[in-house]
Image 1: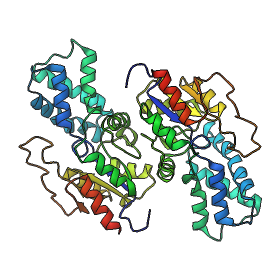
Image 2: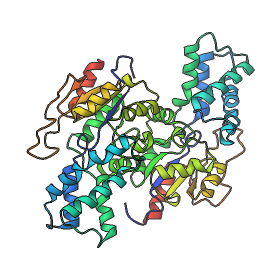
Image 3: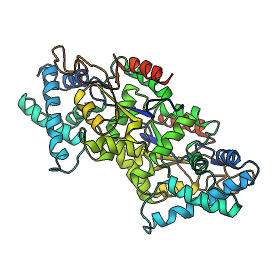
Image 4: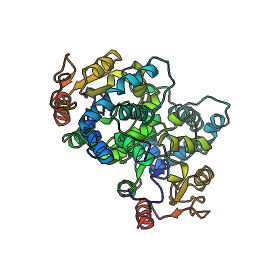
Length: 239
Length: 239
């Protein structure tokens, strides 16, 4: 661990950046509902309730609850909207809700993280809670060094405390921590909190007609093609 | 992850059970002090202040502070006792204090943890804080899935909350979590908290004349020779 490295820890947004939630959720909906609903549309609709559901917690209008709780509330609403009954099989509905623990990695994620891990502490910096992120890592083979979930920081990105408390738990100053994300807004907030930033595009995260986050919208510290490319660029920085 | 596994997570005491603190500290003291002190004696004396220093926190008489703070207080006292001046080089003294972040693994630890990790969530259940345990894992190559330090549970073993809060963060009932330790007292407290237990002996942890914890003193769920043997026995349980 030489003194020339840009940072000590490289942390990753997970949903969308490391794992492909749309495919994973679509498949889980298909397992639950067969062809009773358009599974891709269902996945997008379920996910669309994600940011609004965290807002009252970020605003201090609701005590912190974890994503299992929020995902389940959002699943109930989405299922009602699509006319999909959940009550008939509570254990299957619970299994569906926990599909967010079992999302598949993007093709470059495991190899890329393994590379980054050679020189840096790697971990998620995600709105997922520790148990969800641990299960996700076991399922997808993500080689994290450490997992600090939102249940430990008790807040949700882009609240500045989500970034700052994570750095504090690692006993690192914010500028020795880098966030890698496929979402420019997440990086905006990380930079405001004093972290270093890396952007990678995930142009099909929301499907073939995605129009946002196709490119970096700011001069992030690193802009890479994917996590493997990020590892190469970080190595060049250090040499 | 089949239903027949004894538990979902196997967590490990670290100091003494996974890493050899005596050799690591002795070497760090030699780097700092040369032959000015008996480094083995110094390591044992420094460590002997460990349990007493946590007591006021466990008893509620002192707010939680992490092991970097306690180790430093104990280092100052031990150095004074041995007539070793620390003040001359604060940065070297700080580096010495952080030797607890750089302890070497016992010979079977990495291979054994890698085996256990195939079937179970593996992590430390240690009085170390998350940053210390993360640095230790990077240094020694410990392949943890997740690291929940004492800074997150805000208490020290054998306080029951140290075990219970860790299980809670993993969203597992206590009986789905196993603690593996080389210390019978730690396992006593874990069992009282509802966890499963595994004992492995580390008969030279305190040096060649160690007299305690040479054998299991109770009928723990598993009694193994080392972590590799633990992995084999857990696999037999599941088959």
